[in-house]
Image (cartoon, rainbow, N blue to C red; front, top):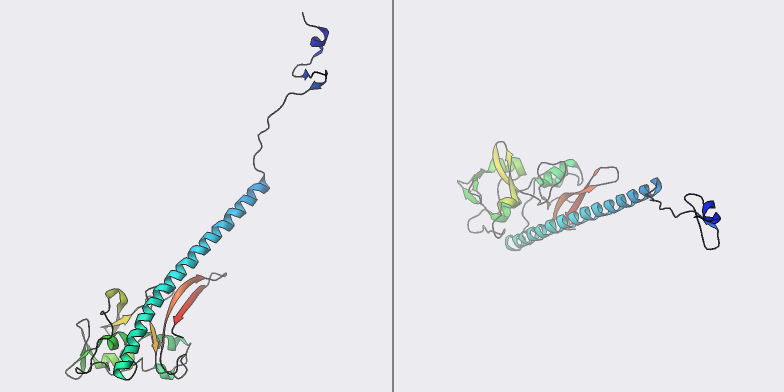
Length: 238
């Protein structure tokens, strides 16, 4: 038999030792609010941006190191050429009359015969030159491409191979002039907007960076700016 006190208890309620009615404990499952989700998403976005930025920076540093290594080698070959020959390898004959920084100057300095001067060429019949890759190139084509009638490092008793070891196929590409394939030294990293990225060389323009010697430089892509425009990095000997 229930007591009066027991009969007075309400369903779902109980009394503590002092007879005070208390509600049973309820467990509430609480999820993320919209604000909290937005905060988490923004933090993840910032972390992702930092990771991408660091990756791009690492890639640029790697590219710059590769370019610098090849530039150092080419400078050694050019300086050795000067030491033995008494002059620097001839550049494009049009360089001297152009204004540095203009598209015409950029195109002219990129069209150079460095690979032939540094590897040497044998004169054939007085008008053609036998290059390092076994091809024979006429003086007229050399003049059309580089504004020079031939290869200075070509006299048999003076010819020297300064590019040691000889260029690897990955160091150059075939550039066709009037259907004749000429070899051009290429930069080992790409440049956005150009099908082929050539090394630039100038030893005759009066306004070059190194008026007493020569300018040698490479241009390569270095990502984009805040507006999405491509950034060009220049790695030169000045």
